[in-house]
Length: 393
Image (cartoon, rainbow, N blue to C red; front, top):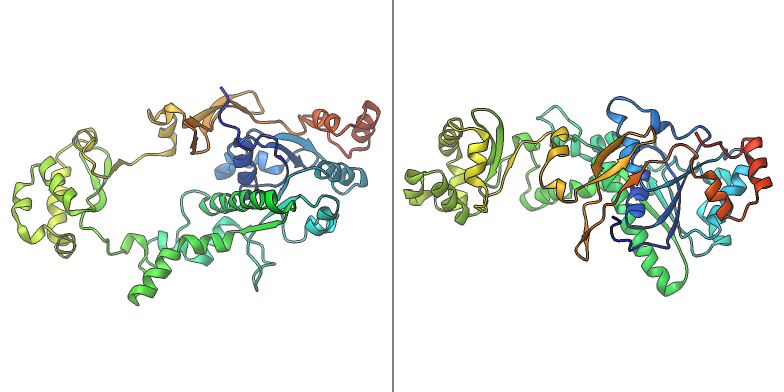
């Protein structure tokens, strides 16, 4: 089945690698845009990353067509310009000036196609740092996110490429806003999202805390919680997170776990009083949780309205019963392996976005893309003989 296609008819050309830029394209393609991904001859090297990078390509490059071009050749650049002549959106995330030097700057392309929306995903917005090379981890370290994540004195990056992905999401927001503005003006524009400023937006709550209180925010593992019970508890087997975030939920929590003595104490009925008494309350709660299994704790909490979470691992999500209801989509990798990967976390008009996807092998769609441009067989053969267009692999 095919999910909603709100961007059907929007043509996107993508010059990207790694995570941030491909995230933009993946979301646009998932929303129904027609997306052509331009890779170097032989394919994007992101395809062959190992270790923690092994999942980058299959996660963020579904639903795209692939053509491999030699952008150092006149013919390769000519093909790229033909693709962009009637494109709605260009997405790129290479170093500042990389596409400009190839004659593919916004200024040059918008002369031929004034409706073009040109999305650049960069390390920094304009300022003293704008020409630095940035990565997700660089931005997390510079912007305070790693400081807030790790133990005091031990900055630790978040456990996923959160800045790459969120920066890509901001790029999509900018593109959608530019498309809406184009309805009124008839003109496209350049949209720039960045890693560093995305990080600053995410840590803005801690900046605001400092502005409000005058005290610097402590790293999350050392923070003073706003609630007395807001922590991970070890059961007989596996840990569980529980949060008691209102006074009404405090009563519910005491009822569920038979904590009559704690509920009887009127001095603990208000949240701030419980926070002040946290060192007294928490040992009792930890001792209680240690007498039950995780499943027993979850069974008591489920349906109560109390926030809770068994501590999941990424590999557990493949078999999660909730995600089985549309949270994962079937994907065929370029080696023919069938897997299930997370779909875009949206529902529109009562339908989930996900649908079966195929990950393209390098240059797999070259002929179809060139034929759509009106190239005849002789022209396609000449481009492939010259090496300007890569043969499908």
